[in-house]
Length: 203
Image (tube, rainbow, N blue to C red):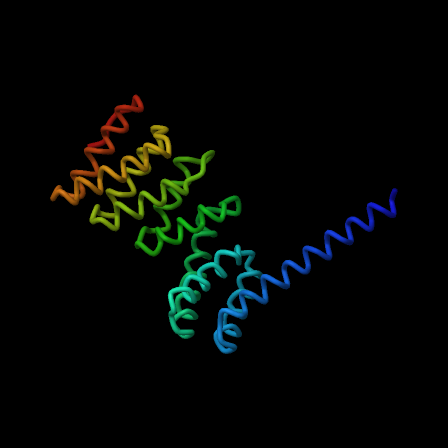
C-alpha cells in the first residue's frame, strides 16, 4: 500500500514537472532570445520578491500578442512589475492575483497608493477587485482622483454590493457621455446607491 502511494506521488510530481517544462517552453517560444533573456531576469527577481510571476508572464504575453517589439515589451513588463510590487506592498500578502491586477490598473490610472489602502480598509473581509476596477474607470473618465476615491470608499463602507458597484460605474459612464459634469454625475449616482443601501449620502 505504501509503495503504491509513493509511486502515485512520484507519478504526479513527474507529470507536474513535465507540464511546467512545457509551459516554460511555450512562453520562451513567444520571444526572441534577447527579449526572453531580459524577461527571465525580471521574472527571477520577482520570484525572489515573492510576487505572482504568472501576472508578469501574462503581461509579457499580451505584449507579444499585440505584435509589440521586444524592447517595448521589456520596458512595459519592467513598469508592470514595478507597479505590481507597489500593489503587493500596499494591499498586503493576502491580496489575490485578481486584486493585484486591478490594483496595478489603478496605479497606472494615477490612483495614489494611500487611496488603495483606504479601499482595503473599507472592505477588509471582501474582495476589492471590482471596487478597484470601478475606481480606475471613473477616474479615467474625468472624475477627479480625490472624488473618485472618496466615493468608492463610501460605497464600500455602506456595504454596496459588487453588482451595484458595476452598475454605478455604468451610470457614471452614461451620464458623462451625455455631457454631465464627471464629479457631479459620480457624486449623484453614488448617493443614489448609498441611499438604496440604507446609508447616509455624501455631499
